[in-house]
Image (cartoon, rainbow, N blue to C red; front, side, top):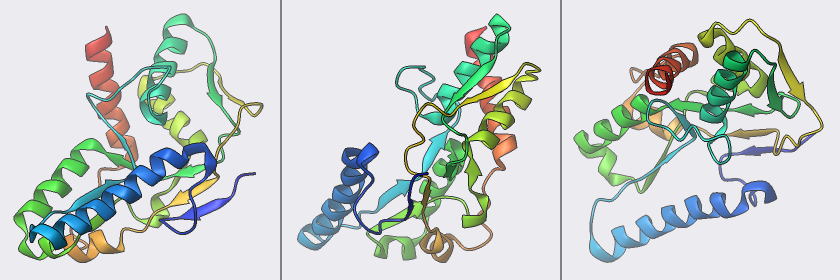
Length: 196
């Protein structure tokens, strides 16, 4: 089983080291620009984004859009919906429209401009396993075939929990995230409209 990582503690997992370091370096760049140029820049760092207009490629799409495409193909071809890995790794997902609302809120609130970075993610308790993600996608498609896990494929890091305490401090508890089921339903509907 993979290890657990919280926010930006410790070195990144080798499976996504370059991507993780790019996020860290962007945060540093924004902080240094703020100091050097006295500008109110904010580095917005989202967790796994999904939603309409995503990259649904089976080759290089992120987990949710790629699984949506896989489920579509399984439904169309009447085959099993196969998910790589054990299905146990946990992730935090952000619906793209929620991210857009958060960014607009940051731009409109003066107190947000005092920060150099903020992570946009749902609460810790809203982590989902990849198996739950696949099941939610299958439900949104009305897929009645088998959802199969392929444990011969690597899981990557087991858990990458990020904290949204700064987001909550800036935007308050009233900022609500779209439920994963609702976000998936809207995304699957958009995908179907564009694909069929």
